[in-house]
Image 1 (cartoon, rainbow, N blue to C red):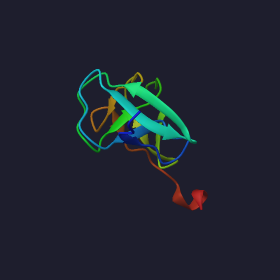
Image 2: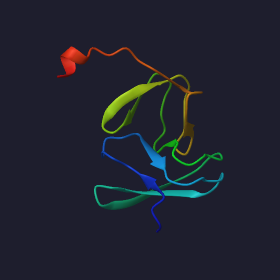
Image 3: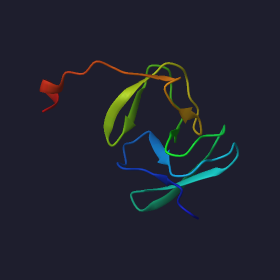
Image 4: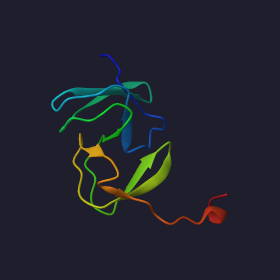
Length: 97
């Protein structure tokens, strides 16, 4: 398996692909030393995010082990996660320190 995506924390719900993928391509990444993969459901440009599990509308998107936004529609594993289906969420940074 050739790794073509990066997972930074095991709790992440998305990975970042490192080259363009075409619908049907395998996106391969390592999680806690284990090789994992998900099939792309659409063409996705390099350096964008792909869901690695089925996500529901309203669910948090986790990247870098941090919440980076909320999902505005259901996104199955293999779906491109972009500005079209994610929104910013208000955060209280003082409580997070």
